[in-house]
Image 1 (cartoon, rainbow, N blue to C red):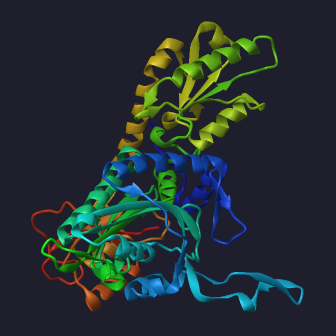
Image 2 (image 1 turned 60 degrees about the vertical axis):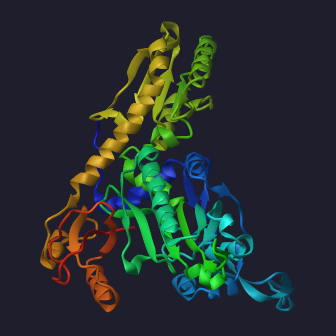
Length: 508
């Protein structure tokens, strides 16, 4: 298998933008920081959404929907929450426009009595509903999920990775006990971990975020962290144990079995369209996007080579029958997604359009293939032998019989390639700050992986000092992996006895 990415990593940002553009995934919108998700990009999101939705429902959650406008007073009830999101909130203050002095502007007479926040997240408005819905311990646990858009004003946008408006799912649950809520938090973290690895072929490390990286108002925040091909980390999903903080702010209480009143313990968790950016930066190569078959909107693309000649009819018929047969198969638990591209453009151009889009298998069928009952195809995961594009010719029956297995092989191969890169680029054994500085010496564009170091889990001012030290090298703590060793070296930052290992690195 070819090395995924051989480009100069100093141009990684330019490469990423080119892949998004050439794969026809998304484009910037007239609204600064927001994006238009084009059909191919949205098709990928639909596959992500459908599979993750199945997994969320399998754990007992029901889907619902809440308004995108949240009264400012709701958010103000939770001090840590409003402070954490204050700089990112978009506010609606008027409900009507009016021509004034020849310009369309907010009507001064239409000012809202209370400003409305455009949903940055939904803990507060969902908490308001929970306070009405929950009366008794018999109403618990309450497990819901919402697929929605959110707005967080972004100063440095990048398509899929950081945009002012993005799509996501957010789960919200309420429980009778702290233990049940913690179990829920970790259960959903595991759902995200397995989804990222099994469906996105993107290896991740699950762990707990440090105190200064917690979701505003959370007791504990957990994340899955993925390594991109430039060595930087991408926080790919989060799960939060909120304790009783939001319940106390919004009076979410229940009558326990002894007749007393207790506050609920709540959780929230979510992933977003940022996952698409993660897939691009994990699997893309010099020819563009490489999609794991499980999320490819078109898993096998058939490109007929038509030349405006009499034999075109036989070629087209052969291709149509091939697609129909493929679509009778099932791959990854769903009907196989084969597609016949009959656009009236040159077959070579069509082929490279699908290469750039990352379709896992692309077959070019000409008159000789149709006459001989052969399928000539290329694998997007293993496209080249040097500068030459590989083409594999297989009898039709053999191709049909092996198509599902081939897709599964491609899926597994992409994961294995990314997992090997992750494992090879997490370095242990650094015990002092000089070792950290030496490892990350050089420019931000140089490839550097992550360091796994011991620390004493400082808090307050001591943690702030650690954070400032890391920021001097553009580093952050990613998480403390759930799987920890039995003993620890002294804290790299303070020299105090270590209590856990953490991952540090540069990140998106």
